[in-house]
Length: 160
Ligand SMILES: [Zn+2]
Image (cartoon, protein in one colour):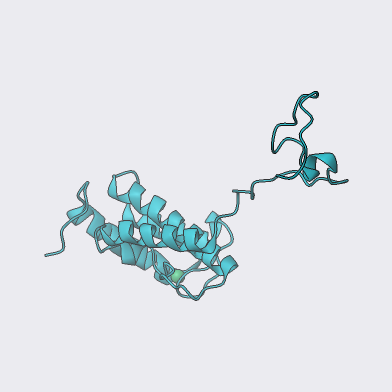
């Protein structure tokens, strides 16, 4: 350092009198954490994958109760992926009610059609009162309920 230090004054501590402090920005931007309400696409994909693994461990009859559960697909856009996760989560919740004995197969089947807004046979279902609009759904619901009465077990069965 070539500067002469004036020991008569208290020396300025190094780093204290920085240009940033001397000349603060006129309109400092407040530091904000990114909002955490919206998950990233990777997080959604991970969540979807995890949900599908939970489903796979269930009694295979779940595929007859909840059909058209969205498959894992990395190519989905953000909105469609969000929708896929929401649907899969609904299916998981519904099926958990089934396999813990809180709902029978047919009831859950009809509830799922209602959730989708149309049944697998293409009949629009806007409310619970529309559930009996599709004859085929009525037949399928009572068919799988037959299975429910025959071989319902509280835990997931092992597929032999
Ligand atoms: Zn139907």
